[in-house]
Amino acid sequence: MSEVNAPAPLRRLVEDFEFVDRAERMELLVEYADKFEEVPERIAHRPFPRENHVVRCESDAYVWVEDREDGTQKYYFAVENPQGVSARAWAAVMDETLSGQPLEEVAKTDPEVIFRLFGKELSMGKGQGLMGMLDHVTSAARRKLHAAHEG
Image (cartoon, rainbow, N blue to C red; front, side, top):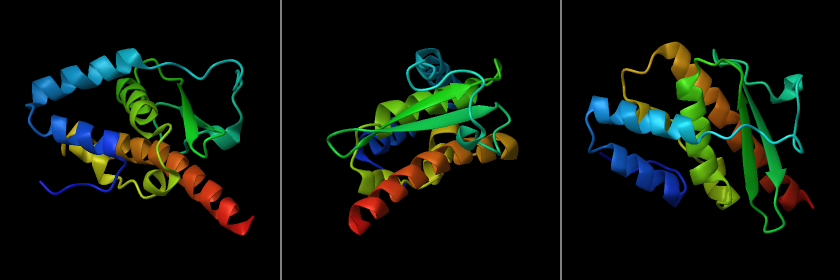
């Protein structure tokens, strides 16, 4: 398969997933879901602000962005649906592979990575929600880049 446009850590993960069967893929994604760490209290607490809500996500996900001194960003997530295993897995993947990466690369992350990780059989509803989560992250990176060029 062709390489996707994403920061190196996410590209490597996508490459690793290309060699596993469906059962292994699901097992790996559940392991990522188990690594999920909810947004810390110092960043946000319930009730979460609507502007952080991922509109298309069935799992009722939220995304926050913290600018770092080194010019990168740290991404935080909440997933309110206890059945939201895919959303928790994707949040853990994004935190691990996009937080701290160059904003130019984060901003250009191709949503195709979602289907490469979760499989082509990902339902439309789940796919829309996971893409919505990614959109929050890539939009934040683009806004930060735009502000840096304006300033």
